[in-house]
Length: 81
Image (cartoon, rainbow, N blue to C red; front, top):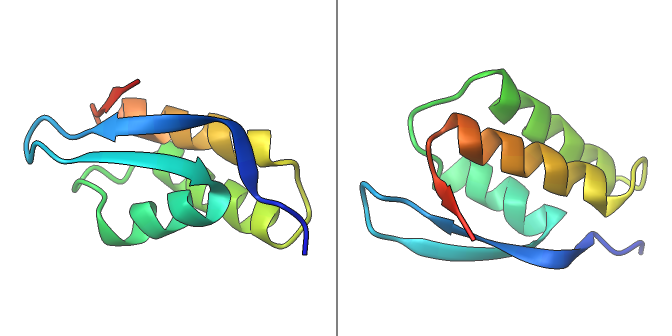
């Protein structure tokens, strides 16, 4: 099985809930997008879903999902570190 791990983890801070989550893989990102994402589901959210799925299925490098996930987090007004 091909790795979906990112070289550098991303920590997401939700200012509304106070929750902090560290995301290290496309699988974790996909899970977060589906279960714990704020109500803002714009085009970047959907791009991130597709990119994560592509990486999980072996069709793209993990960095593609990482970049798409960052864009979705910015679109949702989440804080990144």
